[in-house]
Length: 222
Image (cartoon, rainbow, N blue to C red; front, side, top):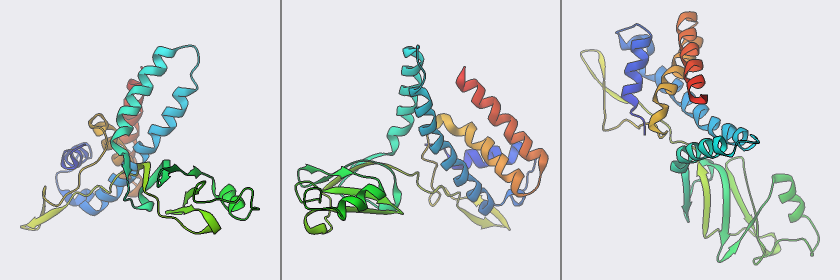
């Protein structure tokens, strides 16, 4: 995990502003979650890119291992789930049977197909879209999966606070930390600065974030 207060203080320091009102907690939380989701989604893009690298198995293995380490914190296997939290669905089981996971169009085609292709309790099909997980068996009746394996979305990060003498002070008890790998701290800082600069039309802050972000990414690729 990445400590959210550490990131906030670094953001304020880079922005050269001592008063928290410059980037309010509400603004920071908005930018922080934009940044976290962007970093998270980049994992899968980079994983796909690494898989396309030919002729250097060592480089691929190193990148693959690093990304898998960062992703594994979001891997979940459970009988309980919140469908809206599912980012990538790996497997769905109904009793002792693996469900066939289909795209939405194929899922609808199978449901509306003839008896030879129709799903059944021994050959169930599944689809997740629009924050809804659907599992269908015999007679197109909905089934409750016994277990699913998936990559979950990062929990919403929150820098929470209490007010003392009109100042917002960090509340560790009610704050929610970033779920990302600790190595992503600097990346989060730079992305938040970029978003903050764009939002507040502060070109210098935005550029500072962009320059630092690009430098960080170049170092990671070396």
